Image: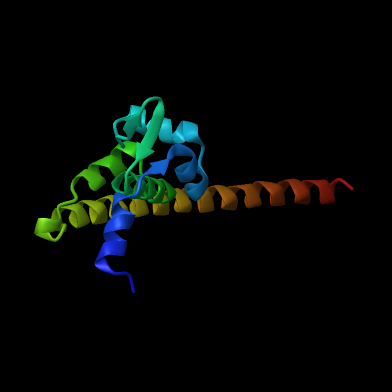
Length: 135
């Protein structure tokens, strides 16, 4: 179990762009893109970018949102609703709404794909029957 001091030290640690890129398996260009979009705001030490633990968490959440099909804008909207003083109810409700919408869209796409596959099967069967009859 971590002591409060260890947790505090971890939260104050700064990360280089290459450390974060390696940790998350993304390019440094991706991280700079997130910066350009205003999703993260690293500190500067000359030309060097230094990222806080909060920046690291934001990148992690952006990538998690991406994995479930959220746009960068949608991820940013949900992340920006974070409010620990209100138990994050608004953030959680917004995320649930986005998840439900995404699920609905994916289920419709799945039905469409299943219909297309059935159509392909039907056309292939007609073609194979025609070939068998002409042999």
